[in-house]
Length: 300
Ligand SMILES: *[C@@H]1O[C@H](CO)[C@@H](O)[C@H](O)[C@H]1NC(C)=O
Image (cartoon, rainbow, N blue to C red; front, side, top):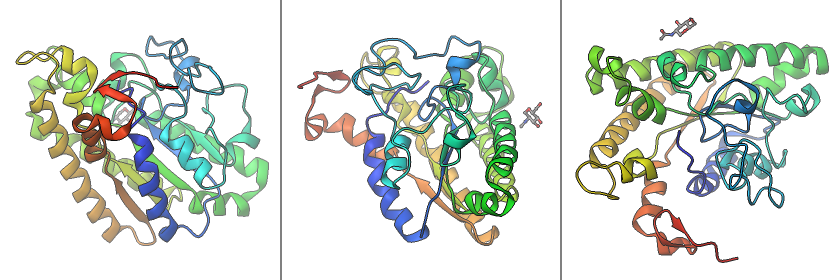
């Protein structure tokens, strides 16, 4: 899992800038992915990949561990608020919410998930293909709730956000013995994942989506776990993992260019968090509250 909500905040501004051009109006935010965007779906499935306990959520409405892998709200929540929608996008599996709430924002993401089915198997979380099944179910409920015509409009004007991929490498490829690593070189595995991303986006397009942010992955060798487990230099970023992330992002960007050419009427933006994240690692003082990367000293 990649519990790194902070650099995402910076992405919000970028996205809002981009989206201002492509979106006259955004009636809903619809989210797919992993822990970087899971608003609490994993609380409602049998998995250990949960964050419904302290210190998670310590800044969420004065302290509520919601199942977000974050101290407070996720970037996607800020994006939603930025569009004048809900300040926190509800998790689809949370029974507290109904289609009335989901009509302007819904999160299908699941911490620990990935593009590869084998990744979601590791911690028994929601695979990406099932996130899409939930989206189809949501569309039907939305039609019942607000009618076919309005639903068609919501679906095509909504902003779709995808954020996943880190777990495919860290939780699966480099971790599961006798798994994908015996089948694919890392370069081949990247292509395999990009192929799944392509299929997923084409399905979204067929289902009516027209505005998508495809978020890349962070310099995952700088995640706290990878740093303390770094075999060559303790607490330094694992540069090999960072290279893998950088290469994978390059392939995602190519996919975005290709699909923007091929899917008429669709606008896809590549969401770059790699350099935003790296900036926080390299220049923590610029961001105020950090004395050393990942040793946060909360000043307030
Ligand atoms: C993942 O699993 C689903 C459901 O079994 C299947 O339809 C899909 O083809 C699988 N994806 C890949 C890339 O194998």
